[in-house]
Image (cartoon, one colour):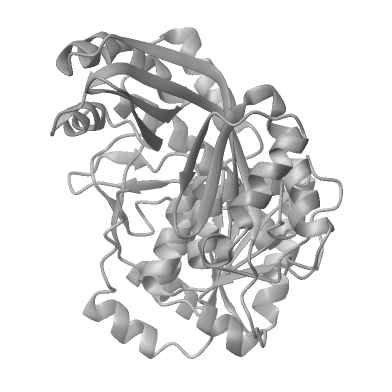
Amino acid sequence: MKTEKILAASGTNLLTRRSFAKPILVQKYGGSSVATADLIKNVARRVVARHREGKAVVVVVSAMGKTTDSLIKLSKEITQHPQRREMDMLLHAGEIISTALVAMAIAELGIPSVSFTGQQAGMRTDSSHTEARILGVDGVRILEELGSGKIVVIAGFQGITADLQITTLGRGGSDTSAVAIAVGIGADECEILTDVDGVYTADPRIVEKPLKMSWCSYDEMLELAILGAKVLHSRSVEIARRFDVPVLVATSYRDAPGTVICSPEKARKEFRVMEEVSVRGIAHQKNVAKISLVDVPDQPGVAAKVFSTIGKQDINIHLIVQAEHRGGKNDISFLVGGDKLPLVRQILGDLVQLVSGARAVVDENVATVSLVGEGVQREPGIAARMFTTLANAGINIDLISTSNLMLTCVIPEDRAEDGVRALHQEFFEKSSTGD
Protein backbone atom coordinates (compact mmCIF):
# COMPACT_ATOMS: atom_id res chain seq x y z
CA MET A 1 0.00 0.00 0.00
CA LYS A 2 1.26 3.46 -0.85
CA THR A 3 1.54 5.85 2.07
CA GLU A 4 1.01 9.57 2.36
CA LYS A 5 4.28 11.37 2.94
CA ILE A 6 2.87 14.13 5.10
CA LEU A 7 5.64 16.52 6.00
CA ALA A 8 6.05 17.68 9.56
CA ALA A 9 4.83 21.20 10.13
CA SER A 10 7.24 23.86 8.97
CA GLY A 11 9.18 25.94 11.47
CA THR A 12 6.65 28.74 11.04
CA ASN A 13 3.81 26.30 11.66
CA LEU A 14 5.40 24.99 14.83
CA LEU A 15 6.12 28.47 16.12
CA THR A 16 2.54 29.56 15.42
CA ARG A 17 1.09 26.41 17.01
CA ARG A 18 3.21 26.73 20.16
CA SER A 19 1.97 30.26 20.69
CA PHE A 20 -1.65 29.16 20.29
CA ALA A 21 -3.37 28.94 23.67
CA LYS A 22 -6.67 27.19 22.86
CA PRO A 23 -6.93 23.44 22.25
CA ILE A 24 -7.49 22.80 18.54
CA LEU A 25 -10.28 20.47 17.44
CA VAL A 26 -10.64 19.16 13.87
CA GLN A 27 -14.08 17.83 13.00
CA LYS A 28 -15.06 16.15 9.75
CA TYR A 29 -18.69 15.94 8.61
CA GLY A 30 -19.66 13.49 5.89
CA GLY A 31 -21.99 14.03 2.97
CA SER A 32 -25.03 12.62 4.76
CA SER A 33 -24.47 15.10 7.60
CA VAL A 34 -24.64 18.12 5.25
CA ALA A 35 -27.16 16.76 2.74
CA THR A 36 -29.82 19.43 3.33
CA ALA A 37 -30.07 23.00 4.60
CA ASP A 38 -31.53 21.78 7.91
CA LEU A 39 -28.68 19.32 8.39
CA ILE A 40 -26.14 22.04 7.60
CA LYS A 41 -27.75 24.21 10.29
CA ASN A 42 -27.47 21.26 12.69
CA VAL A 43 -23.75 20.96 11.91
CA ALA A 44 -23.32 24.70 12.48
CA ARG A 45 -24.99 24.47 15.90
CA ARG A 46 -22.73 21.58 16.92
CA VAL A 47 -19.61 23.37 15.73
CA VAL A 48 -20.52 26.62 17.47
CA ALA A 49 -21.20 24.72 20.70
CA ARG A 50 -17.65 23.32 20.64
CA HIS A 51 -16.29 26.80 19.88
CA ARG A 52 -18.12 28.20 22.91
CA GLU A 53 -16.57 25.45 25.05
CA GLY A 54 -13.24 27.15 24.40
CA LYS A 55 -12.03 25.08 21.45
CA ALA A 56 -10.45 26.45 18.29
CA VAL A 57 -12.49 24.52 15.72
CA VAL A 58 -11.57 23.46 12.21
CA VAL A 59 -14.35 21.83 10.19
CA VAL A 60 -13.69 19.59 7.18
CA VAL A 61 -16.74 18.82 5.04
CA SER A 62 -17.69 16.46 2.25
CA ALA A 63 -19.97 17.28 -0.68
CA MET A 64 -23.69 17.42 0.10
CA GLY A 65 -25.44 14.06 0.00
CA LYS A 66 -25.00 12.37 -3.37
CA THR A 67 -23.48 15.41 -5.09
CA THR A 68 -20.29 13.59 -6.12
CA ASP A 69 -22.28 10.69 -7.60
CA SER A 70 -24.47 13.18 -9.49
CA LEU A 71 -21.43 14.94 -10.92
CA ILE A 72 -19.92 11.63 -12.04
CA LYS A 73 -23.20 10.68 -13.68
CA LEU A 74 -23.34 14.05 -15.41
CA SER A 75 -19.81 13.60 -16.77
CA LYS A 76 -20.81 10.27 -18.28
CA GLU A 77 -23.58 12.02 -20.21
CA ILE A 78 -20.82 14.05 -21.85
CA THR A 79 -18.15 11.39 -22.34
CA GLN A 80 -17.35 7.82 -21.33
CA HIS A 81 -13.65 8.64 -21.20
CA PRO A 82 -13.20 11.91 -19.28
CA GLN A 83 -9.72 13.23 -18.67
CA ARG A 84 -8.71 12.68 -15.06
CA ARG A 85 -7.60 16.29 -14.68
CA GLU A 86 -11.03 17.51 -15.79
CA MET A 87 -12.73 15.07 -13.41
CA ASP A 88 -10.79 16.67 -10.57
CA MET A 89 -11.92 20.11 -11.71
CA LEU A 90 -15.51 18.87 -11.76
CA LEU A 91 -15.59 16.85 -8.55
CA HIS A 92 -13.79 19.29 -6.26
CA ALA A 93 -16.68 21.75 -6.74
CA GLY A 94 -19.01 19.64 -4.57
CA GLU A 95 -17.00 20.15 -1.39
CA ILE A 96 -16.62 23.87 -2.06
CA ILE A 97 -20.40 24.28 -2.12
CA SER A 98 -20.71 22.53 1.27
CA THR A 99 -17.87 24.58 2.72
CA ALA A 100 -19.41 27.93 1.84
CA LEU A 101 -22.86 26.95 3.10
CA VAL A 102 -21.54 25.63 6.43
CA ALA A 103 -19.51 28.83 6.92
CA MET A 104 -22.65 30.90 6.22
CA ALA A 105 -24.66 28.84 8.73
CA ILE A 106 -22.00 29.34 11.42
CA ALA A 107 -21.93 33.09 10.79
CA GLU A 108 -25.73 33.19 11.18
CA LEU A 109 -25.21 31.93 14.75
CA GLY A 110 -23.02 34.92 15.55
CA ILE A 111 -19.55 33.35 15.28
CA PRO A 112 -17.12 34.61 12.62
CA SER A 113 -16.21 31.92 10.10
CA VAL A 114 -14.14 31.56 6.96
CA SER A 115 -14.27 28.88 4.26
CA PHE A 116 -11.20 27.51 2.48
CA THR A 117 -10.65 25.32 -0.54
CA GLY A 118 -8.05 22.59 -0.19
CA GLN A 119 -5.55 24.87 -1.90
CA GLN A 120 -6.24 27.76 0.49
CA ALA A 121 -5.89 25.39 3.44
CA GLY A 122 -2.40 24.39 2.30
CA MET A 123 -3.18 20.80 1.27
CA ARG A 124 -0.30 19.86 -1.05
CA THR A 125 -0.45 16.68 -3.10
CA ASP A 126 1.31 14.80 -5.87
CA SER A 127 -0.03 14.95 -9.44
CA SER A 128 -2.00 11.67 -9.46
CA HIS A 129 -5.34 13.07 -10.62
CA THR A 130 -8.47 11.54 -9.00
CA GLU A 131 -6.28 9.53 -6.56
CA ALA A 132 -3.72 12.07 -5.33
CA ARG A 133 -1.46 11.37 -2.36
CA ILE A 134 -0.82 14.02 0.27
CA LEU A 135 2.70 15.44 0.42
CA GLY A 136 2.19 17.98 3.18
CA VAL A 137 -0.13 20.44 4.89
CA ASP A 138 0.99 24.04 5.31
CA GLY A 139 -1.33 25.08 8.11
CA VAL A 140 -0.11 28.63 8.69
CA ARG A 141 -3.19 30.28 7.20
CA ILE A 142 -5.52 27.99 9.16
CA LEU A 143 -3.77 28.84 12.41
CA GLU A 144 -3.83 32.57 11.65
CA GLU A 145 -7.61 32.51 11.16
CA LEU A 146 -8.11 30.42 14.30
CA GLY A 147 -5.98 32.93 16.18
CA SER A 148 -8.33 35.72 15.13
CA GLY A 149 -11.25 33.88 16.71
CA LYS A 150 -12.79 32.41 13.55
CA ILE A 151 -14.06 28.91 12.88
CA VAL A 152 -12.30 27.58 9.78
CA VAL A 153 -14.31 25.44 7.34
CA ILE A 154 -12.27 23.47 4.81
CA ALA A 155 -13.28 21.56 1.69
CA GLY A 156 -12.21 17.96 2.12
CA PHE A 157 -11.20 15.52 -0.62
CA GLN A 158 -9.00 18.00 -2.50
CA GLY A 159 -5.59 19.59 -2.74
CA ILE A 160 -3.13 21.32 -5.04
CA THR A 161 0.08 20.27 -6.77
CA ALA A 162 3.35 22.19 -6.90
CA ASP A 163 2.37 23.51 -10.34
CA LEU A 164 -1.09 24.60 -9.09
CA GLN A 165 -3.13 21.75 -10.55
CA ILE A 166 -6.27 20.90 -8.56
CA THR A 167 -6.40 17.29 -7.41
CA THR A 168 -8.82 15.06 -5.52
CA LEU A 169 -7.86 12.30 -3.10
CA GLY A 170 -10.16 9.50 -4.20
CA ARG A 171 -12.72 7.54 -2.19
CA GLY A 172 -12.82 8.54 1.47
CA GLY A 173 -10.79 11.64 0.70
CA SER A 174 -12.50 13.87 3.26
CA ASP A 175 -11.58 11.49 6.10
CA THR A 176 -8.01 11.58 4.85
CA SER A 177 -8.08 15.38 4.59
CA ALA A 178 -9.30 15.76 8.17
CA VAL A 179 -6.61 13.56 9.73
CA ALA A 180 -3.89 15.12 7.57
CA ILE A 181 -4.97 18.64 8.58
CA ALA A 182 -5.00 17.58 12.24
CA VAL A 183 -1.40 16.44 11.81
CA GLY A 184 -0.39 19.52 9.82
CA ILE A 185 -1.64 22.06 12.38
CA GLY A 186 -0.82 20.06 15.49
CA ALA A 187 -4.46 19.63 16.55
CA ASP A 188 -5.27 18.24 19.98
CA GLU A 189 -8.33 16.29 18.83
CA CYS A 190 -9.73 14.84 15.59
CA GLU A 191 -13.33 13.70 15.18
CA ILE A 192 -14.98 11.97 12.22
CA LEU A 193 -18.71 12.66 12.49
CA THR A 194 -21.11 10.76 10.28
CA ASP A 195 -24.49 9.02 10.22
CA VAL A 196 -23.35 6.14 12.47
CA ASP A 197 -22.45 6.53 16.12
CA GLY A 198 -19.23 4.56 16.11
CA VAL A 199 -17.50 1.44 14.86
CA TYR A 200 -19.43 -1.79 15.28
CA THR A 201 -18.44 -5.44 15.37
CA ALA A 202 -20.20 -5.89 12.02
CA ASP A 203 -22.25 -3.86 9.55
CA PRO A 204 -25.42 -2.77 11.43
CA ARG A 205 -27.36 -3.03 8.18
CA ILE A 206 -26.71 -6.78 8.15
CA VAL A 207 -26.42 -7.86 11.78
CA GLU A 208 -29.42 -7.14 13.98
CA LYS A 209 -27.56 -6.51 17.24
CA PRO A 210 -23.94 -5.57 16.55
CA LEU A 211 -21.80 -4.37 19.44
CA LYS A 212 -20.36 -0.86 19.40
CA MET A 213 -16.67 -0.69 20.24
CA SER A 214 -15.51 1.86 22.80
CA TRP A 215 -12.09 1.75 21.13
CA CYS A 216 -10.20 0.01 18.34
CA SER A 217 -6.48 -0.08 17.67
CA TYR A 218 -5.03 1.63 14.61
CA ASP A 219 -3.88 -1.71 13.21
CA GLU A 220 -7.23 -3.42 13.68
CA MET A 221 -9.14 -0.46 12.22
CA LEU A 222 -6.79 -0.38 9.24
CA GLU A 223 -7.46 -4.06 8.55
CA LEU A 224 -11.22 -3.59 8.95
CA ALA A 225 -11.18 -0.63 6.56
CA ILE A 226 -9.11 -2.45 3.93
CA LEU A 227 -11.35 -5.52 4.21
CA GLY A 228 -14.60 -3.67 3.65
CA ALA A 229 -15.72 -1.76 6.76
CA LYS A 230 -16.97 1.58 5.44
CA VAL A 231 -16.83 3.74 8.57
CA LEU A 232 -13.32 5.10 7.95
CA HIS A 233 -11.15 5.06 4.86
CA SER A 234 -7.91 3.11 5.21
CA ARG A 235 -5.72 6.08 4.20
CA SER A 236 -7.04 8.21 7.05
CA VAL A 237 -6.33 5.41 9.54
CA GLU A 238 -2.85 4.94 8.14
CA ILE A 239 -2.02 8.63 8.65
CA ALA A 240 -3.48 8.58 12.17
CA ARG A 241 -1.32 5.57 13.01
CA ARG A 242 1.86 7.06 11.57
CA PHE A 243 1.52 10.24 13.61
CA ASP A 244 -0.30 8.69 16.59
CA VAL A 245 -3.36 10.94 16.29
CA PRO A 246 -6.35 9.44 18.17
CA VAL A 247 -9.54 9.72 16.10
CA LEU A 248 -13.07 9.71 17.50
CA VAL A 249 -15.76 8.22 15.25
CA ALA A 250 -19.22 9.40 16.31
CA THR A 251 -22.56 10.56 14.95
CA SER A 252 -23.35 14.11 13.88
CA TYR A 253 -27.05 13.72 14.68
CA ARG A 254 -26.96 13.57 18.48
CA ASP A 255 -24.63 13.52 21.45
CA ALA A 256 -23.61 9.91 21.98
CA PRO A 257 -20.38 8.11 22.86
CA GLY A 258 -18.41 7.05 19.81
CA THR A 259 -15.41 4.83 19.12
CA VAL A 260 -11.85 6.01 19.66
CA ILE A 261 -9.23 4.80 17.19
CA CYS A 262 -5.93 4.86 19.04
CA SER A 263 -2.88 2.90 20.14
CA PRO A 264 -3.26 -0.03 22.57
CA GLU A 265 -1.09 1.96 24.99
CA LYS A 266 -3.57 4.83 25.05
CA ALA A 267 -6.47 2.36 25.40
CA ARG A 268 -4.83 0.79 28.44
CA LYS A 269 -4.45 4.23 30.00
CA GLU A 270 -7.75 5.84 28.97
CA PHE A 271 -10.09 2.83 29.00
CA ARG A 272 -8.29 0.68 31.59
CA VAL A 273 -8.06 -2.16 29.08
CA MET A 274 -6.57 -5.19 30.82
CA GLU A 275 -6.56 -7.73 28.00
CA GLU A 276 -7.01 -7.68 24.24
CA VAL A 277 -10.08 -9.29 22.69
CA SER A 278 -9.59 -12.22 20.34
CA VAL A 279 -11.73 -10.89 17.50
CA ARG A 280 -12.41 -7.16 17.20
CA GLY A 281 -14.83 -7.21 14.29
CA ILE A 282 -16.12 -8.78 11.09
CA ALA A 283 -15.75 -7.15 7.69
CA HIS A 284 -16.97 -8.16 4.27
CA GLN A 285 -16.60 -7.08 0.65
CA LYS A 286 -18.95 -7.80 -2.22
CA ASN A 287 -17.61 -5.68 -5.04
CA VAL A 288 -14.66 -7.91 -5.84
CA ALA A 289 -13.70 -10.34 -8.62
CA LYS A 290 -11.46 -13.40 -8.55
CA ILE A 291 -8.91 -13.84 -11.32
CA SER A 292 -7.22 -17.21 -11.78
CA LEU A 293 -4.24 -17.83 -14.06
CA VAL A 294 -4.37 -21.57 -14.72
CA ASP A 295 -1.43 -23.96 -15.28
CA VAL A 296 1.30 -21.41 -14.83
CA PRO A 297 4.85 -22.88 -14.91
CA ASP A 298 6.34 -23.31 -11.43
CA GLN A 299 9.42 -21.17 -12.07
CA PRO A 300 11.20 -18.35 -10.19
CA GLY A 301 10.02 -14.90 -11.20
CA VAL A 302 6.62 -15.86 -12.59
CA ALA A 303 4.63 -14.19 -9.79
CA ALA A 304 6.86 -11.12 -10.06
CA LYS A 305 6.01 -10.80 -13.76
CA VAL A 306 2.29 -11.10 -13.06
CA PHE A 307 2.02 -8.56 -10.28
CA SER A 308 4.52 -6.05 -11.62
CA THR A 309 2.46 -5.94 -14.82
CA ILE A 310 -0.74 -5.43 -12.81
CA GLY A 311 0.93 -2.83 -10.61
CA LYS A 312 1.84 -0.72 -13.64
CA GLN A 313 -1.90 -0.34 -14.26
CA ASP A 314 -2.34 1.12 -10.76
CA ILE A 315 -4.49 -1.84 -9.71
CA ASN A 316 -4.49 -2.86 -6.05
CA ILE A 317 -4.58 -6.58 -5.28
CA HIS A 318 -6.80 -7.61 -2.36
CA LEU A 319 -5.66 -11.19 -1.88
CA ILE A 320 -3.23 -13.65 -3.52
CA VAL A 321 -3.25 -17.45 -3.34
CA GLN A 322 -0.96 -19.79 -5.27
CA ALA A 323 -2.02 -23.43 -5.48
CA GLU A 324 0.57 -26.07 -6.40
CA HIS A 325 -0.32 -28.75 -8.91
CA ARG A 326 1.57 -31.71 -10.25
CA GLY A 327 3.71 -31.56 -13.31
CA GLY A 328 5.45 -28.32 -12.43
CA LYS A 329 2.32 -26.20 -12.89
CA ASN A 330 0.58 -23.79 -10.50
CA ASP A 331 -2.65 -21.83 -10.41
CA ILE A 332 -2.31 -18.21 -9.28
CA SER A 333 -5.52 -16.63 -8.00
CA PHE A 334 -6.04 -13.08 -6.81
CA LEU A 335 -8.83 -10.64 -6.01
CA VAL A 336 -9.31 -7.15 -7.40
CA GLY A 337 -11.97 -4.52 -6.74
CA GLY A 338 -14.91 -4.70 -9.11
CA ASP A 339 -14.19 -1.17 -10.33
CA LYS A 340 -10.75 -2.32 -11.53
CA LEU A 341 -11.98 -5.42 -13.36
CA PRO A 342 -12.30 -3.68 -16.77
CA LEU A 343 -8.62 -2.69 -16.55
CA VAL A 344 -7.64 -6.25 -15.62
CA ARG A 345 -9.62 -7.71 -18.51
CA GLN A 346 -7.67 -5.55 -20.93
CA ILE A 347 -4.37 -7.15 -19.93
CA LEU A 348 -5.45 -10.72 -19.13
CA GLY A 349 -4.49 -12.10 -22.54
CA ASP A 350 -1.05 -10.52 -22.29
CA LEU A 351 -0.64 -11.84 -18.75
CA VAL A 352 -1.39 -15.43 -19.74
CA GLN A 353 1.04 -15.18 -22.64
CA LEU A 354 3.70 -13.48 -20.50
CA VAL A 355 3.83 -16.36 -18.00
CA SER A 356 3.05 -19.18 -20.49
CA GLY A 357 -0.16 -20.09 -18.68
CA ALA A 358 -3.03 -22.13 -20.11
CA ARG A 359 -5.85 -19.63 -19.63
CA ALA A 360 -7.38 -17.01 -17.34
CA VAL A 361 -10.67 -17.47 -15.49
CA VAL A 362 -12.71 -14.54 -14.12
CA ASP A 363 -15.34 -15.04 -11.40
CA GLU A 364 -17.37 -11.97 -10.47
CA ASN A 365 -19.74 -13.86 -8.16
CA VAL A 366 -17.50 -13.90 -5.12
CA ALA A 367 -17.20 -11.98 -1.86
CA THR A 368 -14.93 -11.96 1.16
CA VAL A 369 -15.75 -12.28 4.83
CA SER A 370 -13.03 -11.60 7.38
CA LEU A 371 -12.35 -11.87 11.09
CA VAL A 372 -10.10 -9.08 12.40
CA GLY A 373 -8.41 -8.93 15.78
CA GLU A 374 -5.20 -9.22 17.73
CA GLY A 375 -6.09 -12.78 18.73
CA VAL A 376 -6.85 -14.19 15.29
CA GLN A 377 -3.37 -15.73 15.05
CA ARG A 378 -2.50 -15.62 18.76
CA GLU A 379 -5.28 -17.84 20.06
CA PRO A 380 -5.73 -21.44 18.91
CA GLY A 381 -9.04 -22.56 17.49
CA ILE A 382 -10.16 -19.28 15.86
CA ALA A 383 -9.68 -20.60 12.32
CA ALA A 384 -11.44 -23.87 13.11
CA ARG A 385 -14.41 -22.03 14.59
CA MET A 386 -14.65 -19.80 11.53
CA PHE A 387 -14.51 -22.66 9.04
CA THR A 388 -16.95 -24.78 11.06
CA THR A 389 -19.40 -21.89 11.37
CA LEU A 390 -19.40 -21.27 7.62
CA ALA A 391 -19.74 -25.00 6.92
CA ASN A 392 -22.70 -25.31 9.30
CA ALA A 393 -24.35 -22.43 7.41
CA GLY A 394 -23.84 -24.32 4.14
CA ILE A 395 -21.34 -21.77 2.83
CA ASN A 396 -18.50 -23.10 0.70
CA ILE A 397 -15.03 -21.60 1.11
CA ASP A 398 -13.17 -20.98 -2.13
CA LEU A 399 -9.91 -19.37 -0.95
CA ILE A 400 -8.36 -18.57 2.44
CA SER A 401 -5.87 -15.85 3.37
CA THR A 402 -4.36 -15.02 6.75
CA SER A 403 -2.15 -12.44 8.46
CA ASN A 404 -1.31 -11.72 12.07
CA LEU A 405 -4.49 -9.64 12.35
CA MET A 406 -7.02 -11.17 9.97
CA LEU A 407 -8.47 -14.38 8.60
CA THR A 408 -10.28 -13.98 5.27
CA CYS A 409 -12.40 -16.45 3.33
CA VAL A 410 -13.57 -16.05 -0.26
CA ILE A 411 -17.15 -17.26 -0.50
CA PRO A 412 -20.08 -17.00 -2.96
CA GLU A 413 -21.32 -13.42 -3.24
CA ASP A 414 -24.94 -14.34 -2.61
CA ARG A 415 -23.99 -15.87 0.77
CA ALA A 416 -21.87 -12.97 2.06
CA GLU A 417 -24.48 -11.52 4.39
CA ASP A 418 -25.39 -14.99 5.69
CA GLY A 419 -21.72 -15.52 6.44
CA VAL A 420 -21.43 -12.25 8.35
CA ARG A 421 -24.50 -13.06 10.46
CA ALA A 422 -23.34 -16.62 11.22
CA LEU A 423 -19.86 -15.49 12.24
CA HIS A 424 -21.20 -12.65 14.37
CA GLN A 425 -23.43 -15.04 16.24
CA GLU A 426 -20.52 -17.42 16.83
CA PHE A 427 -17.93 -14.88 17.94
CA PHE A 428 -19.99 -12.10 19.56
CA GLU A 429 -23.43 -13.37 20.49
CA LYS A 430 -22.52 -16.77 21.95
CA SER A 431 -19.66 -15.43 24.07
CA SER A 432 -18.28 -12.26 25.60
CA THR A 433 -15.49 -11.99 23.04
CA GLY A 434 -16.55 -8.44 22.08
CA ASP A 435 -15.35 -5.15 23.52
